[in-house]
Image 1: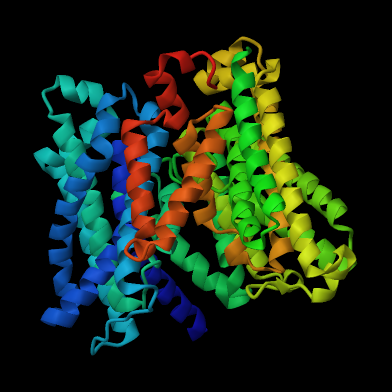
Image 2: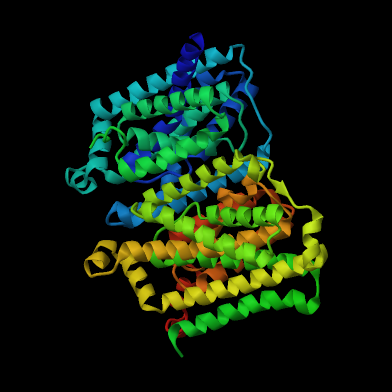
Length: 283
Length: 321
């Protein structure tokens, strides 16, 4: 019996870590209607940030995560104006930039991954903390919940958060109400990137990583966003936990190797039949 | 001269140039370089049939390259099929799979379609990774004996080279005829406004599915030839998303939806990559530089090389396509 309880706990913890990784993607997807293909690259960047900060300043990831958030916000803000502003501001509706934004965020990802590969090659890295694997997982999961609550409060209780939600619901109306939409879009993108880097920073203390690790978290984040729907942090948490439980329980009974196959089949089926998420999303 | 014909002629000339250069010089080194170029051209043309003509961007198009590779490889490996037959079966099988998948997935539009195609590629990769019959994650290796039927490994390499040239040429001609047919007109109407096209009586579902099948047929054969030449196959190299992205890159670079575009894009991309890989300074940064170039194209010349030339040089406007 205890194996089931272990699997359950592990599944929930892993799931919370996955939802941590997915939060930034969901935010950007929900607000800008941009599927940020540089998400994985920024997660990897966060991992290496944690590694370097720990190596040179001996600051553990659960503290350096706040630094990572700040750095991520700044990088995201700059990235928005480099890669997206020109496309987004010219388009009349988000349908027009749907594809070009995929390509421009993908080129961001190429640039970042290229630099990481140049410096670190594909050497596997790990951060050795005096904590057990379970403790690091627990720590990361707690952060996941804190981030969710903070993001939820920010989006629903603050002026800026409300502006972000207004822009995500109807950008033209938001503009008419005097909201500086360009700034709001840039801040949303920056927040999404900050969350991605923060997530990478925390994941680095749990699992080993390399320059290419972000890709698998990015793919999992797609699945989570599609399960949980967009624009609602709670949906992301639930999507993540479902994915974590699925992975762990499936591995208990069947060949673990088939897990990605099942996951992506679910992704495609959900896209086809429930494109607004398992729970219908927030709209 | 008809608008498209000029582009078809230049494209044919470029392909023949890369095909005949190594033959005339009978140089195996040139042959290897040209093989890659021709393969890129073929892949770019196939993706362009879908992406350029209908506006559906497939981010996981490499899945058909991999399916074709695995089909050809297993047919030769286990059953000793003749290569040409195996390649044809691979192409048809891949087109059928695309038909089935497309029938469902083409209901999605824009970015959702793109994500679904990534999902398909990853799902197939994970499946192949776990099938012992296909060699699992390790993949399969040819016994050198297989090449005996083709006059030894040396001749088999030349054979693969001729075949890739031939397939690329056929893909070019097919894409030309699609573009300048009523069918092609239907596809472009889907690209401009799918709902309007459907209202005006275009059977959008059938058109899209057929196009998806066609654009899956050629990559499968190219994959088959590539892995036949390679002598080994594994899931990582057969279903690498990087190759998918390279295909998109080449189509965008050359000019979306044009005949000459994918050819120019593929050649340019190949040359850029070659130059970067050879240079000491940029060797390890080629990913970053590709990223910068792609970003510049998307931001400043979304119409690609062909579109740019048409815009800047007036006389070319009416003949280049």
